Amino acid sequence: MQFFLEYMRQRRRGLLLFLLACAVFCVSFFLYRLPVAAVLYPAFLCALLGAFFLLRDFLRVKKRHGILLRAREMTAATLSELPCIESLEDRDYQEVIRALQRETAALQEDLSAQYQDRLEYYTVWVHQIKTPITSMRLSLEAEDTPLSRKLSSDLRQIEQYVEMVLAFLRLDSPTTDYVFKEYDIDGIVGQSVAKFASEFIARKIRLDYTPLEIRAVTDDKWLSFVIEQILSNALKYTPRGCVKIYRKEKKTFCIEDTGIGIAPEDLPRVFEKGYTGYNGREDKRASGIGLYLCRQVCDRLGIGIGIASEPGRGTCVSIDLEQYELKRE
Image (cartoon, rainbow, N blue to C red; front, side):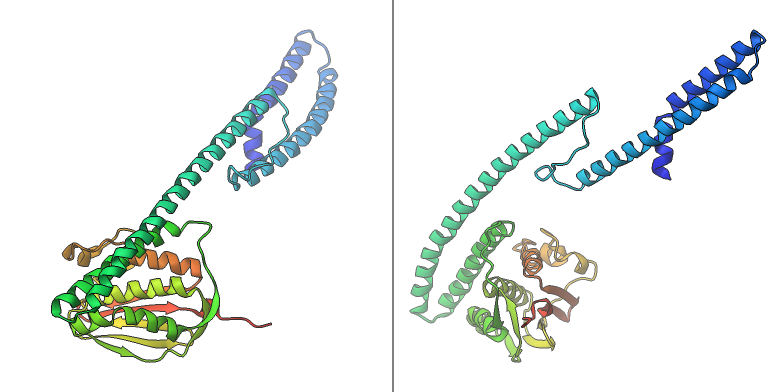
């Protein structure tokens, strides 16, 4: 009904012109003292004919409107169907649209090339910088002193930040190497925890690990990235106490710490890019990227991630793998 009323509003000039013509004929016949019925009957026939053409035009416009609504849902790259050209104005509009399509395609191609160049550069940079990091780690492993342990911890953080850079760049890449298999989640968690063993010892943080006994389909490399980010945050904001890893439900496990917690007003925004909250303002090293990347990776893996916290009592991050339960035919 709304579309019909809008259509009638657009055609109001033609309708008013028809009524005005009828009125002119009626007045002219009246002034010449001719029977008004002589003009009413032709006017009635013209009205019927006009109604027929008006209905036909309405159906045509409605069809064009439907095509344009479908076109509105498409991107510039996939837009192919446009209404038939019925006037010079239609042709001009479609030429403008086609020109914008070509410009958008060229811009997209240019941006894609720039993105690929940037990704290749940082990928090479990451692999190059890993060489001295590995060399430094091997050198530090040769001695066991408080200084070497401290340097090893700092070196692990550098490596983690390097991995964050690469993950950030690869998130939107169409060629990201996701490999989905059924894994024993305990194996993935164990490898991630082992990377932080020295830091647990140095900070005297106890690890309370209960075997998860979960098998799920996922990508082990990207799930490890998420777990390591969560463990890094847990250690960073837990001055004393412990970090617990346990299964909560059939396909859900939790990483819980006894750290400083997160303020209630910050909790809804911790997964936003660049948001650091109160803790981030106190700790100038916080970038607000870690949890954002975790949420993005989890979305791409099709798994859930949630967080609960209470200031002064700790934070609990839960990872739900239920969506990727392996279905056997």
